[in-house]
Image 1 (tube, rainbow, N blue to C red):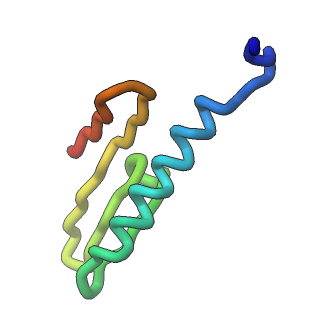
Image 2: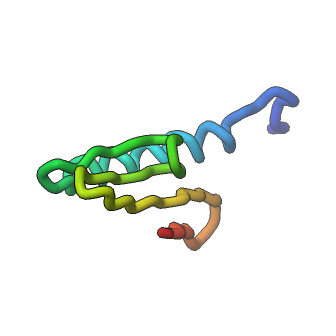
Length: 70
């Protein structure tokens, strides 16, 4: 079966993966931390002391999954 010209499956899989990472991070938030999506990076966690932790999330189909944390 051939892929349709307007098939966005691969792009949407990356977006869904980004939201799954953000959801996982929500459960790990500490007091006074806020999670942001697509503001400073793909997934960012900020606190009221001015701290910032940001992740760039990439998903590729294959044997390995790459997660780059900045």
